[in-house]
Length: 411
Image (tube, rainbow, N blue to C red; front, side):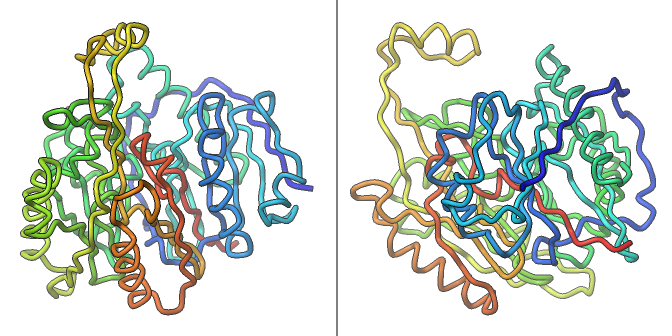
């Protein structure tokens, strides 16, 4: 039978002190993983993503053990028959009941670090609902998150390294050799720390030696649900890195890129054209720890995917209560946070976004093939499975946003 972990909460203090990482570091995602933690279902989220989740689970089976997080078994405990239908055997996964109502595991799940002896710990970084710590909901989320992380660490028999910085999983990426890419939104999440102090704290927490700060993220990833430009609206985090830049190895960076021709196609493309060129300049003018220039591979943006929506009398007050300036009768175009770089890499396998057929005329099938060829060249020993993650993209995230890897540990 699959395992079921029931987490019961104890009062724990909010962690506000930093600690020496004592040789612990955050491994690159292509290093061997013992398990992959996946946001499977909460009361509010999970069901709508079933087509994506089922394809992910089927592809991951046999490559890595899966810890599937569910808020409460009272919501739904799928039977073993359900999982057998997508190719999971009873020993392939563990159901973990958390009581924590957040689905997006890249930012809310345990951030695992390890040392050279193979021991692992969890970073005790707070989750603030994406800069929302100054209201009651944000403070409640932070407290519940600390309890949830503590219970996960206890269930695994590993310790917590306290940290006093907000460090969402989508805000950084490491090259496995001491260099970390950082999103500029980390400054917004940590306003009480000067940037130099914040950088030192991040480097210490992640066990890295050099930080490269990137500028703004993609236009399709605004903060919250907000207007991007003209009639276009989107939902997102405000600039997570896994939407536009990823390390592929110690010296190679993948960067989302808008061509000169695409720059003329839409106001969204124009924004991304400018932002990615700024990020390219930063990457071009930096080096790895050995003083070597980074190899920058430009990858395509998926052609923009939108749907038209008219605000009705019923929904208008809800938007206004949340500070969103929309009134009944307003017509908007909602933009999906589509990205080829929101991929998952685990033991010998890559789950790669693909968008062919996402809309009638989005024209992305050629780009799907281009991205596949890039990844095949970079990862010749990996099996690559293309999955359409659009249902996740409408909510501002993707496949990478709902997982967090656990590295292999040794006694």
